[in-house]
Image 1 (tube, rainbow, N blue to C red):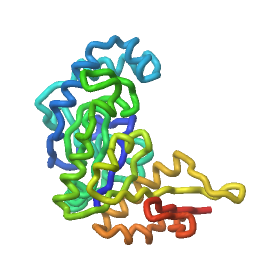
Image 2: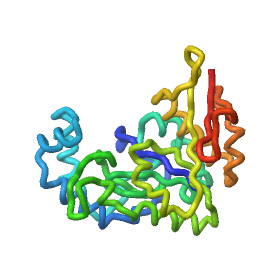
Image 3: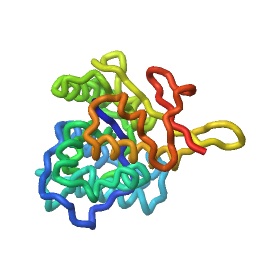
Image 4: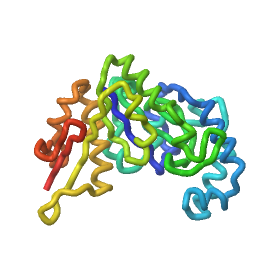
Length: 255
């Protein structure tokens, strides 16, 4: 089975990478096209597009101006180690062994507005470009149109290599919208994590993000390849809730 997760706005390019092993993103030509488009924008344009402060807009303006090829460990970092945030805190890749990273490289993909589809060890340079932003290019009015079928085709190729038909969707709705389920050559299972409050179960974002990372870690550390094995996940008090689940949506609850 293949897992997909979202990237993070938070980045860490100061801590040294725990491994010297790296790969290069498959879609750098597309990334270059987006960077060239973003370089046409002023910091004020970026602030309006991304709905961020001028301080963050100026930072990302400089990031686009500084983006350069070729990607090397001197100017870039492995995606799984560069991203921070709740999902990546739950994932805890900093203590992955070389075997963990090798398994993750085959069984985990990160969706990205700038890079399309990343393997864990793909080098990235600092950026911020959410998939939902309306960046107009020759391919359309937003990043969903820009990436088109590229991301789905990339997932299909990996599923074919793995001889698997199971895609585990641990990405946010914003990012998974870039995948075309009607073209996907596999079955999608979307785990959901819910908290019991006032007698009802509901999704609380910060907890759900961390749980997505923890479930990804659970799969990688235990070398799981059968989706049914996900149902034994019981970290942080979560339990698989068959009564609330369907064939495509697997609900884990606690409280």
